[in-house]
Image (tube, rainbow, N blue to C red; front, side):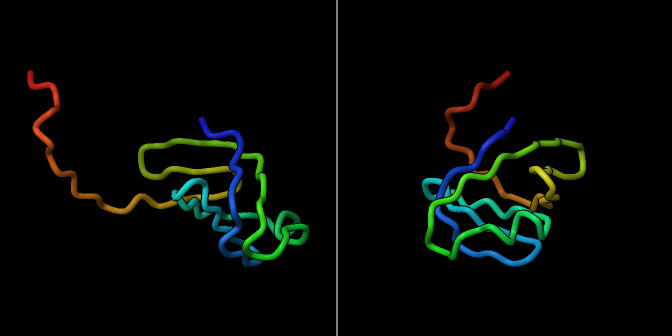
Length: 81
């Protein structure tokens, strides 16, 4: 489970923050009470998270991230039954 995000704030909006953590950008839905104290884009931030996983969506903290269809490419190294 993800409990903490630390990285560079890429964008912020009253209900959203995008945090780059080592090249992976997390799009997190946040309440206005979290938006208000956030620094400007480009600054390092730490966000405490609460992770929820369900069959139809993946949620971080006060967010709901929709999984987008992904095409997986076989490298031939997978275990074969």
